[in-house]
Length: 274
Image (cartoon, rainbow, N blue to C red; front, side, top):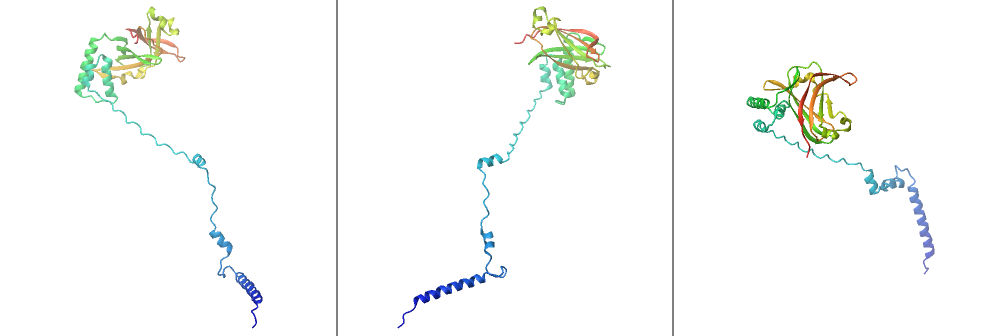
């Protein structure tokens, strides 16, 4: 019996493998459109993951992030002003300036006065005016009926001057006001250095409103027209002052060229502070 030639079989098997590979290679050489096998490059383009984007460090990302605007805090609700009854205010009023303030609140829209309240105001006004010193006449248009020199304590402006006028007729011109605080001999050295030689402090100003509109701006109380003018007094001192006042006007260069009416002496005020 002849033995199988295993060497020839191995050679034949290898030959068949080579032929099969060649056949498969030829089968893949056809057009991509007609081939049942998709091109390898296209497959790779679809199946490969996209390149990973460069990651930014967290601290850099925080730096790059836009700032978030902080929501504004709600504004506090405005405090409601307590409007005291007129009868209570009149009972505590000590002078004409206090009563004037009640009427001013009505003009400013802070309160509405009834006919009865207006009558009560007129009565109180007449009582206080009668008890006070006689008005000081400055000119045909103006009388001074009351004044006050109050310590306010503001830096550089220790006192505020309040002047209450009866406006009897219209001014045809705008005048300035000069208020002089004369110091007695024992307090002259406490005046500002620039005022010590003259012996008095002087506060000149253009009133607001100007004098030409005083009649129309005045409040009507007890059938007459009144106007309150206030002014802070820079560099005032806690010493006694004798207060005097004049109306005047300047030329175009700001120099005083004349007085109008009379100089009035309002008397001494003593406010030595605490």
